Length: 413
Ligand code: NIG
Ligand code: FE
Image 1 (cartoon, rainbow, N blue to C red):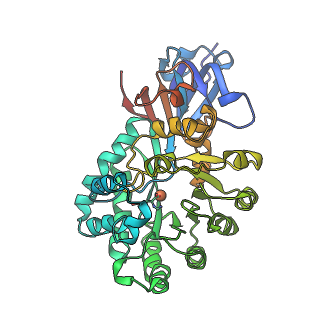
Image 2: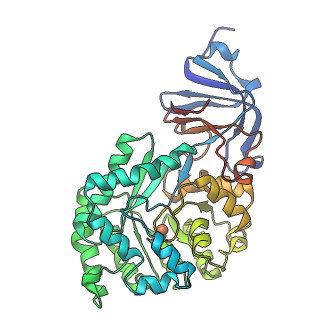
Image 3: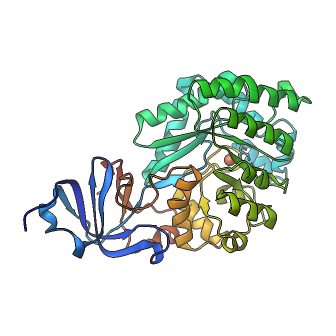
């Protein structure tokens, strides 16, 4: 047979976990092959259906030796750009202080704000880069990064510039979120509505004008902002044409997820305290439930997010690290998959969908998250026999090769 293709790269003898909806579990293809061309997936399917002998079809042909390929992993909720750390607070919490008490006493998020305001752009970049690199080591190819430790225009913009610079220097796609409404800065004590004026006025205008944010987030909580203030932030985002998402129902049920759904939010995140009305609202608006087991674990939360309700109403569930210095100093998305299963009782297939297909949806990205012709060629080759192993093991990194946008960017053997 004459070669009918000239793909850049082709793997055969691989097991594909395509993660597309509706088919077999994991969208699994046992004896699969996958080809990339110009940064996108040119072909994916059963090796027996390849349009000719594998070695004639691509400039480079590789034997996957039975390894497993998944879409590149997506960490859809992080605060990984910050300065300092809060190890001392961790000690205080273990001695009995609560996360909320520390926040009310001026610690918590505000202590990271102090450190971040004092850090130069370069220092912030250098502090954040290793955290991002830890994620990439495990096959992450897309990461969301929030601002929210500046709480003043200049520092918020600096954080987002650092996030953009990380994308330009490392093999990863970064999606940025402006989180000016993360906490009330000390200089606005007792004047939270005035601070929201600043967020919705000067801050968001500057961020939008400089093209620094892909979305807008807020922290709707007793120690964050109330529902009316959150709604003002959403309206300001709408004026600038930016999609919204929300930290909602992490410590109490303020009905933030319902409001987020009303504004067509891409995701509502945390959600331990959400009730069924919030879940049905999310189902109607197609809002992703973004669960953060690292924060649940680290804050020793006992109230579980209602997985049964998300399943019942067919709300897509994502999983993310929430990488941040206060509630989840986690730099492993694989560990979050294991925790999603052990702590939240997700299935390993749900956990993998949570860091691929549903994580892409949480970022409003429809060009990735599944292995299908035409999608971005962000792939990970894992030294495992079955994709369930990715959730089953912990503290182990079976990543063999990472392909980002069609290029091999990491290879371990
Ligand atoms: O997602 N909940 C609010 N924000 C972060 C925590 C930030 C911090 O404590 O520094 C979270 O848990
Ligand atoms: Fe968060």
